[in-house]
Length: 156
Image (tube, rainbow, N blue to C red):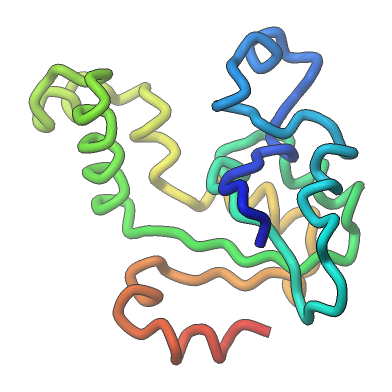
């Protein structure tokens, strides 16, 4: 795994003016060459990879990954939607982006991405439609935190 967590390369859309105007903190890796440089020290590792949770939310990441890395094996970690919604709410509240109570934010925020993206079916469908099932391992985050060794053995 590279030192940079969340490279987000495959979610970056250079033709999207909103993406292009975002800071490097949001999209730190913007070219394939930059992405490849993250793995410059790779020698004889059994597996390499990176972790960018926003790939699941991205409308284009699955097809972009497939075109660049057609034989890649993917691991998707999904959370219980209720736990994820509350966790995202707390993150937004800590950063000052959310001033409402959780109950108010939930009631008033039916169209907000942090609520919509917490239900993984549609997001996972973008990946299962372009990758063969034997190239994907879908794990529940809660299972990883309670039985990490047993779950890791199931990843091939």
